[in-house]
Length: 187
Image 1 (cartoon, rainbow, N blue to C red):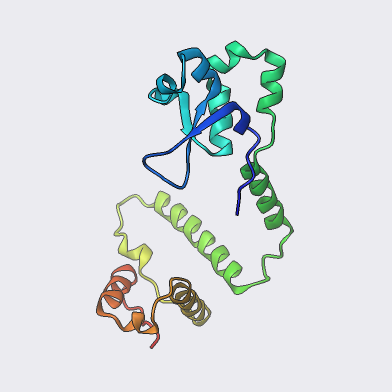
Image 2: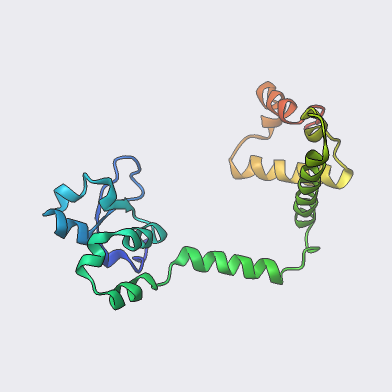
């Protein structure tokens, strides 16, 4: 599958990223022009970024070489180009607003978790003495939370291609006992 080029791609030249072979480095064409070639520009950290739309736009917004070679109106027009990551965030936020919070047990669990966390923070700030963290992380699970835990554990096992005997492994039991003492893993 070939990825579609992002809106800022014409302003950058791609080179191999020695730290991450799946994501190229994008060297600013205006920095290349200013410094006399790609060889000089690719060794200056201020002249390149990872080839991600948001990062490329951010580079252009800060790049003095870009502003030197492009007039102000065109700079504003280029920087106003859409960024797919921003659109995804907006869609997610809209979907969250439109979604009914009571639609799934997972939503209810995360909602209770957020409320629990915020109330814990409120309790923490009202204490005049220091409390042990054990009071905040050690709690028993309700039956609905226990069934959700089992579903999430099953998803973890299946999505990672682990054998079902994973939950019987001594190391697995040890890590879960460390994270949540007293928790019983399903067999």
